[in-house]
Image 1 (cartoon, helix red, strand yellow):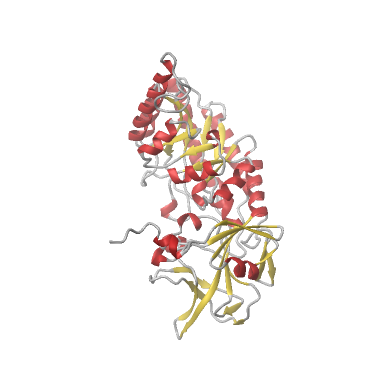
Image 2 (tube, helix red, strand yellow):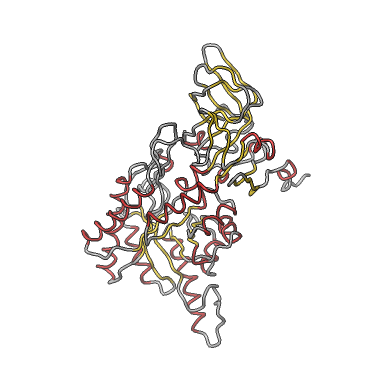
Length: 455
């Protein structure tokens, strides 16, 4: 991927610094035809990023993190491009199944899996289950033992009492915390011991989990997993985690005589967030990870495992744009200018949560006044913290009815959206070659009231 390019999809068409088209579709037409706010996903850009990841990993596996955007059409594209999918809930699993994913292309995550989600794993709904804690490991081991025992019974059906292929154990990875901090905000640094995910290497939980998994007749330990954080722009930041994880693979070999063949290093590669920011290279990331695994394998005296990664934001984020219609423009003397749009923290809570940046630009052909000082882009919700961006330098001051576009918006917008203030969630369209396809219907007021039970 090119560096220092605008943080918008590759097919974005600009008139100066005003966004006028995406995927060959005029943004004015998109707003008129589908309404605003509108999530727009660029199919060509998205497919190119998926292919870049597959090329970067070589013989490794690219497992799309559905939490970033779980729209069925996006999952279908991932599967069509040869990716697997990781899901972290029964809902994400249902979406992946609706997209046509076979069990062997699904990985089940989650730090507090429900009994139903563990049962789905035992029923063979996924190819790998990532175990997050010792209690979960014990529960899954019991389900697996039931499945194995069912296969030993005379005349046993192909699917045993605990589901899944009768007589076979459940394939698992163990999620470990390598004690490595990486990421753009403490809320997304998941490789340290001071957070909720995984089994600590330093604290001894990882060793205990390995011992339990190896001894459990209902489980087949296939590999190890970690995820150190998100928004990482330097691939070298992953190297300490790689060394720690490969070191654990060596320990498993030394203590149990087993060479685990799979290592999933999670996701975490960042994206360009502002004009002129360098775009982290997917190719360089893949090369760095593969080299780190090779080096760590040599240092610890083990064969390099099959590598897997789980990109989310770095895969779908840059391919998405949100279009907003401008409402009020409030200029407060000696304070600043607030440009209010018809969405806000309900369709993108990332700035409110951890000050995540999105580049904004004027969009469409509507008139704008001469630019003044940078503005704050705010939403329509009843929260002072309903802010999408502060200190935004625009080429002109937008007027009511004009359009603004937020870039790098393909990840953690749809998937984290809410209906705060009973505001319906936006539609999503997939654009390619001048064609726009609706892939997520806009919610209606009837949708918002559908589950209410009046007295």
